[in-house]
Image (cartoon, rainbow, N blue to C red; front, side, top):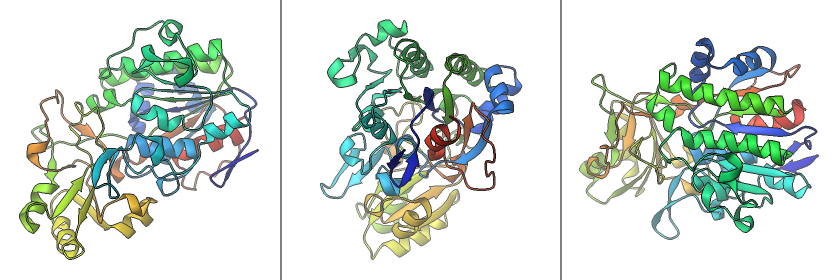
Length: 403
């Protein structure tokens, strides 16, 4: 039995695979199953364990993937966005460097206990965070052709998988993750494997559309193969996804920096969008969660004015947001703004290039994208379905309840 971040985990008796399907609003599964595109998932929903859980807010990739692999909220592990304002250096930076991670991962603890571990993630931005302290295989689809034994614990990934490295803006980037997982299970049979996809498809295709159903049909086939090899599988998501448009199909955006400059004067406040990462073509760096840095004197006025804007769900002070969303207070702004389900937040209109959007905007970040699936391919008796389940309960269920 291991203790990691105050929780206990049994060592796996069977190969265990935890899957984070990026952007998997529960309705994606419902629609694909209803359309007959996910026969494996249909059986698991009937015979295994299926829960609708909450992810962490902000409902972005980095905070939730790190919550899943640490079994803890951002207040413990410190990763509160894809992007932050580093007050120590006065610069805006990506939260990709492992130095930002404040807590050990379950994967590292399992590896240290002698279990073989493997991590496959779609985008390279997550690889070093997920693999921090973990000996074993750890690589991304994006950089699969550049793996080395020293850096990734493996060579010849492209040959092993039998697929070329996909374009980063494609469904193929996620398919490579699943194909690599199946190949690793066939050739190395790791004790524990973590697979994390990208939400390119979910940003472009709503549940039940042909593009979405094709993606989930693909996923179902690979999961079925892992199941047939005797794996315990826990599937969850880092966040849901919603349309963020006006009735004419254009993005419904509140440009916070423009408002703040008008109210307080140019340069009096700084808007940070934690959704920002190197891959913004499909969402334009627009999400439903923002943090603001401003003076104590300006804070009451800004909070009151922002709360009057149509599309704003809530404006929190730093302490309120840290408590409500379990966030590290030293890494969020003086104010935290959450927008409503159909609305996103931007900085200044001039700073967002939306020319890459070739479909009506779908995005995430707020409370409205907090509901995610938590599915285990084993029945778990006596499960308390009235408690609040979290996506970061995935390893607990997979290792402690489903073996």
